[in-house]
Amino acid sequence: MKLLTKTIHNEEKGSALIIGLMIVAILSIIAINTIKTTNTEIQISGNDKWQKEAYTHADGGTHIAIQLVELCEERAGFDDANMGNFVEGDITGSALNLYMDSVPNVLKINDTNRSAVFPRNALPTQPHTNISIGSRRVTLKGDDITADNGYDAGKTAGTARAYVLLSQRLGANKAESAVRLDYTHVF
Image (cartoon, rainbow, N blue to C red; front, side, top):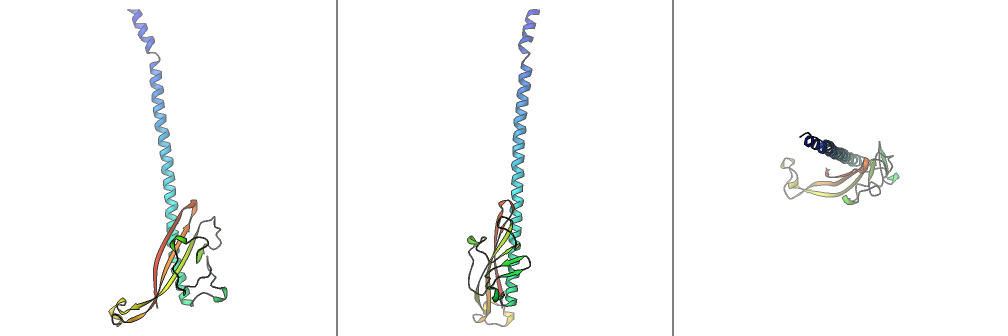
């Protein structure tokens, strides 16, 4: 009987080691997959942050475009001696003539096809916002104005300029966002 007991113990000696190694291998695979998933989630949240920042800047660009429109309306255009080129604070622009009927193409706003850019000293490789402004003159009818203004429906009530304001942000880590805003300035 003693002989039989020794034989059983000799055959079971290495099984604990094999089971232990299998558990360590399974736990290692789970740990590696967890690390990979965590790294992917970190990259996704980083990209989301850069994209949201680019959108916020692009949206802010439309507000700057409104300020440029109102400034141009107030001044009756930018200095003609500079051929429409201007610098306003940290914004620079070229050939901005808001009185010509032109509507920018949202697909073509870029570093070479724009009305203004800020910050003005940004290199093409640095984060910056491009602004493109187009406009057309529109005639308002009496039914476009509320009855409180005393206009009859169907009669000409005045003029306005309809603007298409495009803003494109080229941000950090190749994040890019564009916003279009339709804006009307009533005279």
